[in-house]
Image (tube, each protein chain N blue to C red):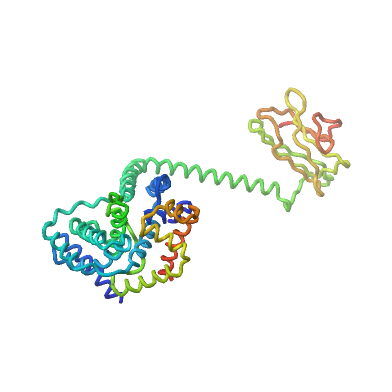
Length: 254
Length: 182
């Protein structure tokens, strides 16, 4: 618990009884909520006690003792008056009562929350497993050190080859290519989705790496677009809105 | 002499308990122990032996009427009584009704002040700290504590800025505390 710096000086004045007006009201309001500042006020009270104790002077006259003892004898002990605590000392009591009420409330909620929690944990574990699997797939697909091998019939020279995996409802598309020759300078390949109806839609540009491999993952496509075929053309590096003939590669759905 | 201090502290407590059951001799013993402190604080504030005696009488009568006002868990008796005496003396000085109830006095004193020897040592330390302060700082502390002036009254009297008075009082009190932490 620490003292709030903005109240540090006012606390000292307050401990000496030297704080007045709005500043005093504001500090008393703050003390109601701040245990750290209440503690500091107690310490400052101790500091002022040191000041009080530092005084020295003559002892009181003997008559003062006599006067007191006579007054004591005249005034028999009354019943002990219940000590009224300072108003902020009640704050912990209210807080304790509130905590007890909350404890009952939470106890009642507990079993339902535990059931919910168990169900959430089960779902969360499933999602973590799915995510892990997806990460592994993507890591393999995107690994720069992955060995990429295209298998073709024996004694056949390797041919450019592309493979599209497309889920139309999620507009999710993965395209993998191999044995692709480099496009001419300042040109790139562009993949096209050819829908059942309408014009071909651009589905990403790519350039193969030194081994002729390339990849396009999830290009921006509208969901639910049914594809009749996919095609590849050679376009400017920034891509084109419509394909430029000729089509260099093409494939239709199975 | 911590052992002696502890005994004296527990004696104070036992005496306050005895007062609860109406033991006049316990009252006399507490008076003999602490009337000097109460009187010297009152005299320092009021500068008048007659009125200081009235404060002395009032403080001890309040204790007699309601010994439960002293909460032993909050520290030892002597500093508590000294603060009560100061507050009553200030009320008297400013001719105002008691501004705060005795039970609102909650203090926490780090040094052990229960024994006479410990207290004497602590007091010489406090005086040394006060003596080592700049006069303007000591004055600000004393005007607030022994004259019962508000910070704006001190500022008006000394011609200093309010913020300066606040800072002097704060650092002055902390210097006192620090002397007992070393």
